[in-house]
Length: 311
Image (tube, rainbow, N blue to C red; front, side):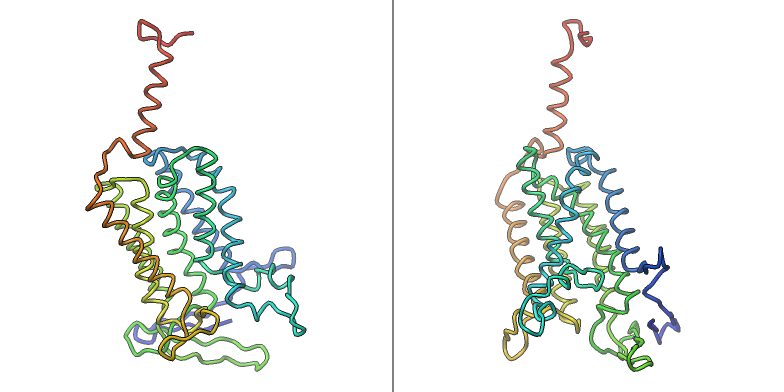
């Protein structure tokens, strides 16, 4: 149980992580919200798939591999940087704890990295354009992340440091051992910052995809740049960051996700500048246009001399 308030807005929410019980097992709001975000992302991407040169079935085939591997990647990323949590007192690995994801512990960057690697292998096998699949996937990631962050709200987690800003969020979490609520103060609602940042990125990239998409991979590169910039700022406000093996910079611990966010954003911005300013692209390069041409050629090849399809 937790109590979330927005003092300046006069809002108060009494939240329970558990939505309901099924056959004696708790079903958490976090999982329901993540599932809802996933379904919305899949639905949107399937409708948009033809604009990127693929079918909805192509996407489903890819997701059958990408989704489970993304979960594994998100878990591995978390374990690597919180290895002490998954080690027994005698120093041996606690394998049971590592696979028990119901206790929490998934890192979005690990999931994205695993998903991208899966898409690359999938497209290599299918002889499809990697950039086109990554482009449509960028929209799915933004939708999933925008919705999924509200799971953090239901868990009263992923909030920032204390602030006096008008939209500050008060957090009180129930402590089972103490038998009382623990006051975490009035803090930055960083879950909300990231959700809104992803919504803005979704709208921006949707407009770019409709009007100014020049090459396959442009939308995904734009996603990496946009998300990286936002995450670098938001991560600096959080109090639950993963840290880079205890290393420090100017006396402060290095936040893993912040470093990765900055580095990925810089690389992505550099690639965008190179492709849009110094390299010429033609409409014929786009996978969707090539797919249309191949379909047209295939139809022409099945037509008889009189223009009718041969039996």
